[in-house]
Length: 280
Ligand code: PAF
Image (cartoon, rainbow, N blue to C red; front, top):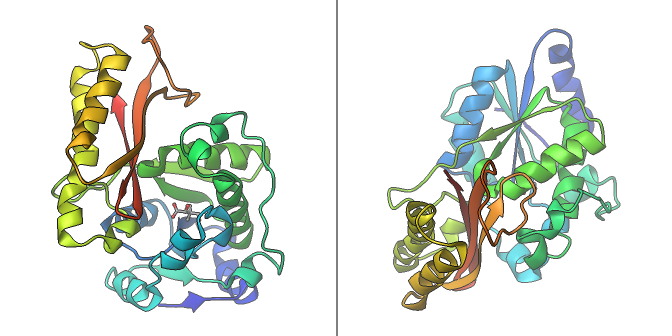
């Protein structure tokens, strides 16, 4: 499997595909797991060639410790992708290569969705995500790009960025892949010990509880129920919010005809995990 670190060689390798073939991009920060592989599988169904980018993007981390401790397992990732025996290449640039020696975020106006939930707790995070995804789209020029719904807010941000920059890339959201405990798969799970992994199951359990009582209880009662779930656990709840699925704004009262989704972020020790669930 070819691993490209330079834009020039990547561009040359992709050139023959530009005429009549389709290229799919799966942007990742590495430490690949089954969730990523499901994105790659979907991309392989839709395209002739799939580029998996592996790049731990410094501009989207608001916490230096999180950036330093983010798992980096390029060799293992490439070995895992090889097992697919499919038309996949890896793009793993250095930061200076991808950012053309200017490692800073652009300032985007995503219409307000950047200020909700993750945006409140991770200053500048979505500017960093928008910037790096835009750079990856320009380097790879894919027909389609695949993002997991675990990062539902990120998926909406990427759609907005693509529209703002008028990039000809179709964005495909893919379902969350879960552990048997229903914990959403995440590269950050690799930093948890077995006890913590077990305890982290409360994150999805609390979302399920919210979904179960969504029609019966008020939003404030559900918020309290979820907060109570965390009282007896070793996890620390950062936020739980029921939001309008389109605007991502927190809602206090349900209205007919509006789609809702609940979102959560919690710390297991120093590891921050997120999850979400549609409410219907
Ligand atoms: O979801 C991720 O892994 C990252 O935020 C992404 C989309 C690869 C951008 O760095």
